[in-house]
Length: 309
Image (tube, rainbow, N blue to C red):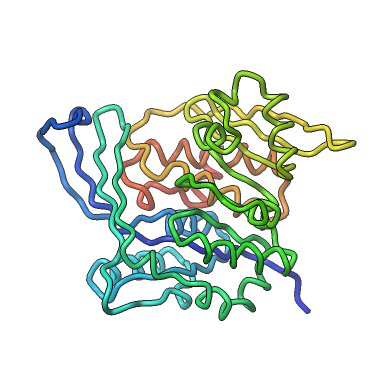
């Protein structure tokens, strides 16, 4: 049997409908936009493209509608080297969309309509069991039905793959799903929701022990412009903390930067890198993504990352 390699991403594909404006509107307010563009997006597709552009062999399991947005998304992923054979097209449901507002500072506000992503079912995952078993890393997020993602986590765990769970957008998940995950990736707000704390960054030692008490030894907490914190299980289960600084950049658009970070982590782990090394590289990839408009369109290639170094 050949060794496991590459990444399988199970997740969403959305058409990103992006409007740029000077500032994000307040509740009930209308503001003028300067530009409108439709781009490929969705957390699953973003993470798959980010890893693929870094040279990783990537397969994407997801669902789109049989419409123009679905065609655009599949073609875009395929163009970036992602294996799209496991993307299902459904005729009676529109492809998912995200309506994104981006202000002059690059900050964004996003509303997601799941559309066909809500039709990704456990049987779609089970019929890809051999593909999952051949992967070094199984990368998961929560823009698809929870039961489906639980199935993917279980199959990946049983196959011995590294299961990377990006708990975004946040929702409560069963303890078994956390147990099946080898690495949890959350931002500080998702960490606070999961642990029931107001600010997990105040006392990192206590936060690490809270994660460990829930069975999560390896965790990466992203902190935006403040970088990230890598938490790993150490001797006698005492957590080891490694802060990872952000890479300075001129921020143009933060859309999809978290997915760039996740895809880069998955790529590095599939290559056999340690978690700290993976997080340092992912910080650079996310920084480069923030310097360009869009999500997938902004993700650097392996050569661009090497040139930056």
